[in-house]
Length: 241
Image (tube, rainbow, N blue to C red; front, side, top):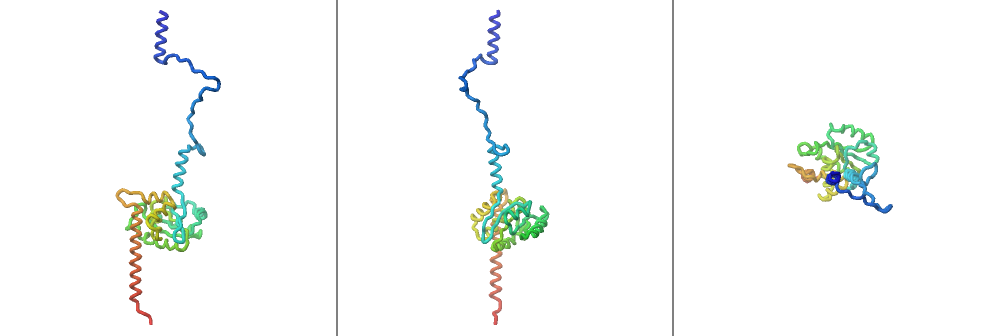
């Protein structure tokens, strides 16, 4: 009876825990070490993968000067510390695309004057640019091209430096004589994230690049019309004695 009870208990134990298996033994120092899960970390304990992601995001927002005509252009978000920004980038002129009620745009103009930096305010409605709402400002972009001919270092900014800024910088490059592909390359060179928003397809609407190209055509057409009218005026003026 005792044997049957012992056998039954052993079978039940094996059914639950498995049969007894003697532990493996290894000579001293030969036992395989467990493989720990290794997570590469960078500064401040961040994983290498997340750190690389952060670096990519920062790189997309980096700002660079692009030379055009005799001056330079740079796309930017709204500078938070203007005096430091001007000193760090050696800025000589700032073009602000913010509306008057955005981030106290007029105060920015006063601050520029105090620093001896030129300032042009061309308020644009937002990412959804249109001829109806924004033409008064867009029509003045040839003035900015003139600044580039005068060797100015011009920063163009809106709030985040992506939508309005991208369209305007593209237009400036085109008005300066660059072909479409070269103008796109210029926007990309000055700020990657600005370029990405410029070419992004928008549902039911033209991309900002397409809108910018339409602005260029309209400005050039207006320039030709003005030039032709001036020529007619000159040719019809009375001859001198």
